[in-house]
Amino acid sequence: MHNTPATDNIKEIKENRRIFSIKQFVTAACLASIGSVAASAAQVEQAPINDVPAVVMPGYGPGVAGHVSEGPITPFCRPNMVCRRPLAPDATVLILDRTKRDTIGVAVTNASGNFLVTVPPGGYVVHVEVAHTSLRCPEVQAKVGQLDFAPVQISCDTGIR
Image (cartoon, rainbow, N blue to C red; front, side, top):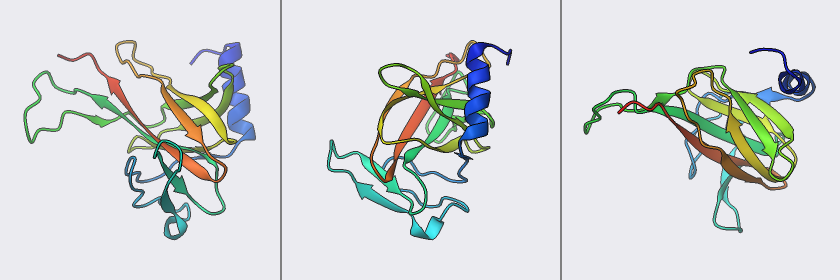
């Protein structure tokens, strides 16, 4: 990564905010294990707005928790064949203000493609920075409540056909 005003801003945010990686994240409906981050106290709650699941971890949050994968990883995907894999570890995930697109939080994926970062309640865009120009990762919306982590899943397209 070259030093630019944007990367300098990311370095500053990384130094000033708590950045978490989680060991396992079961998307959307369930959080089975959060590694060392209060696993026994974590709960999945149904948020009243739009029935969006939310992860509550007493003592942490609010924020965004997610999983980033890439695929297809082979030109011919067949039943019972692995066609997706977690994105490479240490990928940078930016949490951007939905309106101004300012960087509010930064997370780094772990070896399983999971990330967790605290941000204030509000509406955000989650953006994955990728090193490979052929990899396309869509930006996703996240609405963070007062005490919960908004779960997101990002599926990056490798372009393999």
